[in-house]
Length: 236
Ligand SMILES: N[C@@H](CCC(=O)N[C@@H](CS)C(=O)NCC(=O)O)C(=O)O
Image 1 (cartoon, rainbow, N blue to C red):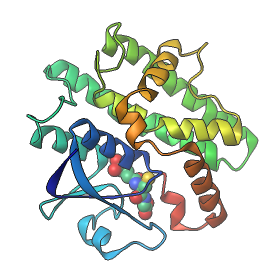
Image 2: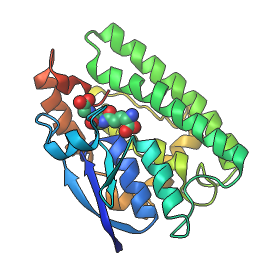
Image 3: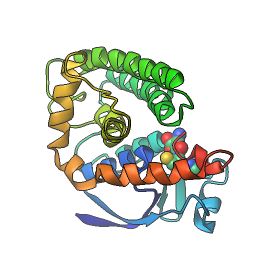
């Protein structure tokens, strides 16, 4: 992997937002310095690089910070357009559609499954499971439409939506392990269930996705800090 001069990533191993950026850099074959952040005690570099949200990921390219995971993936795709495969679709309509579903995955699916972890009662947990499965139902339809019968959202190889949803999959495994919730069930979302298996076999997934136990351990650590801690926002 070529190491791109002046490329640093401020991250957190268990963050799906960070993971999608690592996946994008892997797809492009770009080397970078990875700097794990302690979000319990935020360091100076994170605070000056992302003074508005103070969140990871932040990609620092030649000293200039780029914040927000989707903006970073767009940036990587544009700056290294001639390096490796394209991440976003070339066709403007498909591009707009991919952005629509990425925003949906982050604004509806992600908060729903994070809610499963933090629900104070079993009743509220069941509601969050329902919300999660509704979002998965929409994404199952989106997969059918975007993939056009091919292996990935982007067609024959991994692209934007594969990264956006693929970066959340190891947390789905953690949810199953900790709460017995099956987020992508073969009977209800057969296209996505088959995609999960294919995605797991890609170099992108194999090289950068953390072990599910890392997520389980991190969640236990977060739970011990609730309530009233800003750490509660780590996966919000
Ligand atoms: N919309 C942001 C979300 C990033 C985010 O929520 N990062 C979490 C880690 S998973 C974080 O840094 N939280 C620190 C905090 O909330 O103080 C993105 O896409 O980059």
